[in-house]
Length: 163
Image (tube, rainbow, N blue to C red; front, top):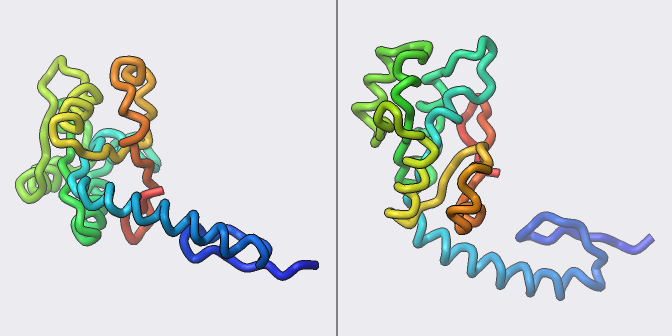
């Protein structure tokens, strides 16, 4: 059985014979990705998608928004949360949401305006990535750049992880 080792950049397993070549390719990809990421430190967060993520009773949770804000700011991102006007009325703790809206940059989509469209508008205007588990299927044909800027996430008890 050939000895195998992991790539330090992507953590995939390779035979030792092919590992060096892979590391050279992976290193160059990582450098270009870092340069792109440094340009885009501003992120637009789908607040509704995040608030409803892993809630047991189906009601949105302000705790998810606070965890995401703390995680993103500690990682050096500048987050802007976009929420719908309906979320304000359905959230589990409205007072905490009001306090959160005062501390973080939160844009409330006007009544009657699709919050997904508002997220896309802001991302285009600010040249920012979008953090959402939504696939934006209704908008991909109109905005072909959307898939390249869409970042998925996972919520853990310690915070938000970008996938």
